[in-house]
Image 1: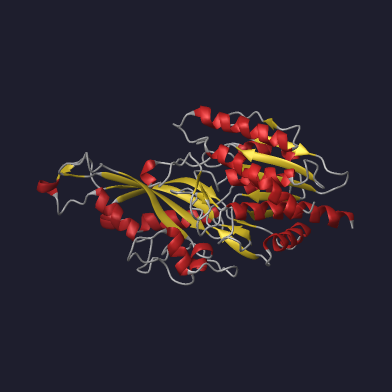
Image 2: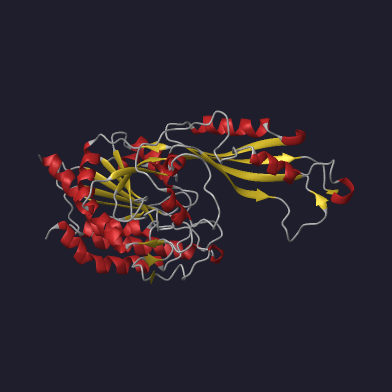
Length: 447
């Protein structure tokens, strides 16, 4: 049976598996119960073994939830392909505004399946299961599989890769954890922004002061912090930090209308920055305050605040060096301290960007696979999220090519937010593409 027809026949059972996995709240964040994550690991392992990975195991790690590692051998001398996805998910807080229970898979009128993890990344797991089932567990290439259990939090997989580099030697890595810009229009994710972060602390007073007695001449730390944060952008919303790298984006475009719709901006709210949206997303840095420490509204009283802190996250463009970008951000914060306020900067993260090579045989085989599966030639896109793991995989297998794609279309999937969903037809096309990739790689190796 041809691959597309075989995958079509498999889809009812694959969607049943996906819906079951969505019911398991496998949130690996600290403070959440361990039992659902452990259950997710064991039930995913059962599915992996049933698909044909007879040697699949939950691998021992020093801390945290274990990754699943598996392998099924192909014909002697055939290419080696490593498939990646993760079985943990983001929290699904009621405050996010879900319109259906995040742990109850729900099919709505648009045909999509809603639920936390449906796209990110339980959909990726099912894509890998479907890929192997398409060959009845006997693929034309050697297939290795790694399913991470802590991708959304403090990952333990880099340490596992460093300790066992031989397990990750391959010709092609398939990272099924991104997606197309819109349904039915294939793209490769060829670049990832990096992520640097710091905590800036602004201090102005030795202790709290009565705002009526001292307010006016005495600066409170929160207002000083607000003025400092406002210097990070120009009036249009572009990052205004000297020394931070700006790049160029020449791949697929993401229109302003599509971006507004997918971001669900409130009426009247303008987009920030200048230039095409795709360039703002993937060719320019961005900086955001993602947390603030000071007195809560409920606990407030008539006092001036002596100290306030903010956590800043800055996404950096491919080709930049995280340490250099973080140096520039820290220097800006110290140099722009208002009213002589004392400013200190604690550096907390320096994850590098990543760029995929697109001139190898793996990429060529994947391009043909996407075109056949989707019926149109693929484009190239980038992703604002960073995947630091890729650097460790690259160290373990320096010659391996990276293919980044997935089932999470940016326009509608709403990963990490409320009403996350996946389009079953998109999942089917990606399974077909992955199966065709294995076929193409095996054919090119044998020719």
